[in-house]
Length: 601
Ligand code: 1PR
Image 1: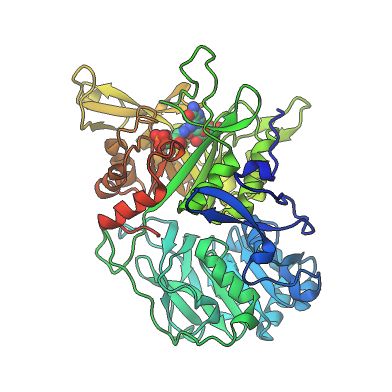
Image 2: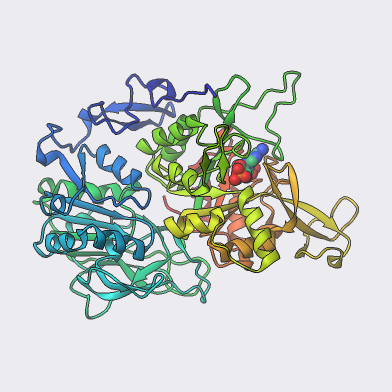
């Protein structure tokens, strides 16, 4: 395919400079500036950024990064570069000991990470570095590894620097696991890096957490509540670690404060003032459940070979004209950047022809991800074509390799469609988990919080629920012949082929196989603007304990409040209304807040 994508000015309205898409730090760095009047994207040269390092290549402008190769740390890299620093990767334990400032963005599973650290002699170097009070920032698993042990596939011994055991969230009280989303912090003690946070929300994505106790009290700088208090950040001297992701949105201020401690030294500390916790919405504990608004970009090559954002009506993305061309709603990188600035909590790319175009041959899609992740600091999900594949030369690619390439290119999560249907069918047929499906393999390596399963069901009306062996619902609106029931048949290949499995059965099976989240589309509602399929979303969000993203059919702000009020969906995704600029993301959020539904503002 010739659909080349450059991270260049032509991708952005009003831009006059080019942006580096590679790791070449000699290229000029830029960041988005939003022109609220013209509602277009511009680049502002890095030199005007308020706090910047002298990019002289001396050690003051270098951050040492411990990336042991188990997952996506590209977004952390992008954030560090965005803040004006160069990156030196740790190759040997000596690199840790010699670091001026060390960032450790742990990814993947606890046991695998500890294995690598032990085998490479890095565990000891890390302990020495931290015990010597050298500047350190651990992120997510990079914080958990500091504790004594973890229950994740364990018990597994950790670095043992902080008293406590990392355990799994319980889902029995209605909280979805993984914990994915934006939450407020409860500040427990002074920590300069948290000073800009106030009541802003930071992004969490994890299934395991450490709990505050008398033993680790002197470490805990903030906690968060999700079915109980857990440790959100720790701090002792120059050593900091956070369970959330400082590379996302407001979290960047935390990263900036860690990287530029001198610039903030004169400021008064917070004095342990607790941040305000807003009232929770549906559960009876004192917890804020943030609801997430996602902008989705269905991407494919048009007939000229250009990669475009398209949008279907019930999955038909071609114009109803004589030419029958693919509907073109804009450039993927432009739109993703726009939605980030407009306040989207996440951005999803679905490579909708991935089932027939092998994604690793579809390099423009990878380039879109690379370019987007340089400037978009909210979670990025990418789906389409995640499956095993053998190319024309007989070279076999595993689905894990495909996912790894997506992660390396900037995805925080990958979304599996068709292949998850086949895996679920096989699992329900044999009752055995082989560990070989794409879903199982990717979640084992990257953690289930990094794996979304995208379901493309179609409603099939029934006279009686006994007419089918799959779970059905009594529908709110009867079918064309007065049918009162329906089941939701899963499809593959972008809705082209119906499969002998229902959405309910699929959702439960993929949860068991390791999915961390479900993206629940509905072909009947897609692009119709008449509202989400509440019957379907209620059915699935009540059936599983992992977060469910409601998708398809949003046409007004009221549709978002309806889906959050009437179902247990954690997030709502829309495409058409945002692409056609019918409803701005901020209007959705303002409406939700007005209705008492918590969202990140
Ligand atoms: O099967 O693993 O290769 O994944 C393919 C992915 O591409 C799946 O996630 C599948 O949902 C998606 N896909 C395939 N064909 C289409 C199509 O539209 N022809 N798009 C397609 C699915 C559905 C939503 C859409 C919402 C919201 N798009 O994501 O964005 O329905 O739209 P709306 O707000 O305008 O109603 P694989």
